[in-house]
Image (cartoon, rainbow over all chains, first blue to last red; front, side, top):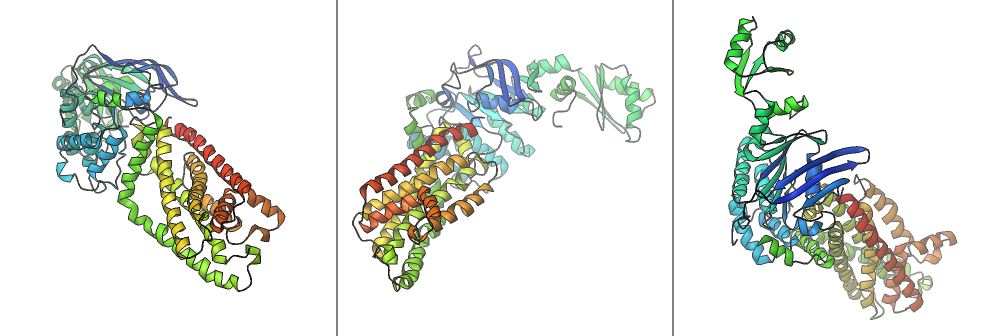
Length: 321
Length: 269
């Protein structure tokens, strides 16, 4: 490869690559995306955080030019996705939620087939394949069939494949769903490097840690709309207290303790099926106060606010429910 | 630069369809061995059993109703045409459905510049190639078995391939509308079987009652069989042959038109 993916593109936060106004997607009577507005800038990593069915994947498909919007405006790379779909897709990379690798082919052949879809000459594909397999640390498996590869390796191959056309925008739909923690970290590391090289990342996730690790900016999506928008830090500051006290009680006493804690002098209390969360400024002080009131939790944990708390606050539900 | 390479490429549909076709070639290069049994040995056994085995029996009782030719010469072009139909049904059913449900070849291709119609036409090109390979082989077998009566048999090869296309295009278009693969069982049971039996394949249509004969005249396989038979026996009735070609071409064109639509509807939701 003549250069690493994306390195030719200057990072500038002024250039809008994707612009949506009132973007809507309906399937019959069901509204999957309900009039959302956003601008995505070159070089940023933008995340759609939300539970399953929130409308994230429908939005991704519209950006990927494989799903015509039902209403509103959508411009990608300055073009109309319905009319110029082929030209736009030539500049996109897509990592779908489910792997679409051809398992009967080898690792290399998968990249060859895909590169041919983009009309790349075989020589170019060969060079890029070497560099990309090196990038996702799959060089030693280049001649192996895809079928026996682990989920993590397949995901890395899918990422390599999505980069064969040196895309300006990489669209990732739940890139680490179903991977074990170690495999997830490898994927995150590679995505972070891509971002450093100036590739614009658009990703959906229902993992808050993934959003925190990778996204410069994100939207919390719920019921087809945006519930909030900002950087992970901003969202946490805006919607969550500095600290969270997690309390777990004997299941017999859970409801009773929860009732008592609802009136506790905290910013907010959230009662989950198995725990009670108290949103407070000082977790240790709050824990002392809980104990002083006569409640004795089985376990307690003081932690910082996370996007999970933001989500809970905004939607009343947990992300992975 | 990435975008420059892409910008230079053409978005013309034949070019994009050809890229999809190349994908299928790559896949075929890896799996061709598994198709040997049905492609190479299948028609050989068929010709041997029907043409020579059953043929000896038939020929002993006189072949006036076959037009005076041996049963082998009568049945061989029908095996050619119906073989094309069978290949078409095989290639246009499960592989098409699987490309959205199982190995997801279409879903992967969709994220590239290829449009649904390109994905369809590329795959159809591959189906035509597979059908043409099989029909070429059967044509050679026919010649080797001494089952042909005319050099026109050379044209039976494209005629049989066209017969295959007339099945492959509409069936692929239909396969893209299915939610489960169970409907294919009906295709093979109520489509392939009766067509094989009642399209003038193993016995002349004159043996059928009038109403059933009329029914046979509208089935595409009869047109393919009759066309191949005329060419193989060198007894070409030109107007009738042209009607067959027109019928099969129209059916292919309808399938190609429909496929572009069903693929778009299925892939661009």
